[in-house]
Length: 190
Image (cartoon, rainbow, N blue to C red; front, side):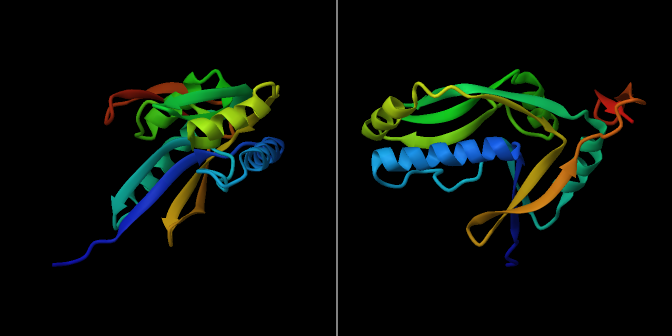
């Protein structure tokens, strides 16, 4: 029996350097307050779009490389902190305003419905969450950035490594809406 290699891809949006620095600083503060490491402590700031596993080929990358240049860049606004609850555990994240364009991008790439966010500390147990949230709950942060590309990470040696940057359209002046009869969905064509 032949052993097939499976490629694991993770499509993300990388925020601007000032937002990355802010998120890293918050992660350090959480570690200092709770006194130990936590899930997502060392992950770089990103907005998750979707993960994809593929046997052997890079078909999804060819599809994304065709689709993304037909889409306009996105202006992404972050505003304050939020909380996801997972039973008794909780995740602290940086909130995204105007979530729909990012959620639509994830769906266009073949992903599922998402709530766009930038994770600070994932899946904290109640005691750790209480300590971290007591320290962070008054944090006020507003910023924005332009998303001109989607970052594709590839899982190699138990680590996500940057694999590709797939650009969104740079030409906004000559766009028209056309129907792609193959997929029966509307898309923007340069």
